[in-house]
Length: 170
Image 1 (spheres, one colour):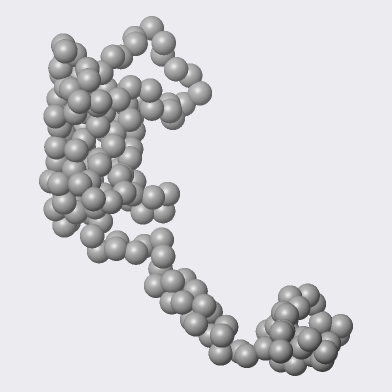
Image 2 (spheres, rainbow, N blue to C red; image 1 turned 135 degrees about the horizontal axis):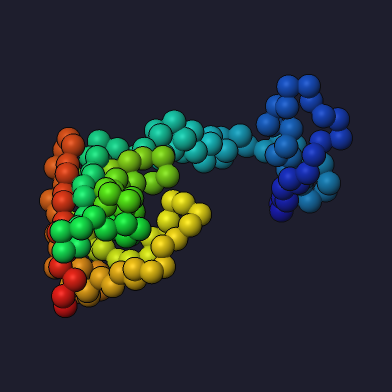
């Protein structure tokens, strides 16, 4: 006996929107019968566990705040992109302000970086915070700080501060 599942709306809308009305099986003779609800419990349970576990904060115990200052030849470096790339996992990113300060973000709602060893990548061209951009001073960051980065940082639980003084020579 073959059965098909009709995923459409029921003829009469139930007042409390009972989900059982949305999963109706039809036999090969056209008779309608209620689908086995137990097949829905596992996916529904997994979705609930994922949602209530705080999916955006998963592993937030392994994330620590990271700030610092970046200078080039002793002067604060503005509008630089800073990326902390862990050995395993998702990178954290930030950008420097007018005083060279940065704060990393793991996601749009979580500040910090994963605990552990990171390769640090610093590059020019971060989006400026203001509408005006000073184009008279073009900053070039040597490859040893980005594409061939030699910078590392070991993020520990608790607050972390990593200052980097870059030299403009290659």
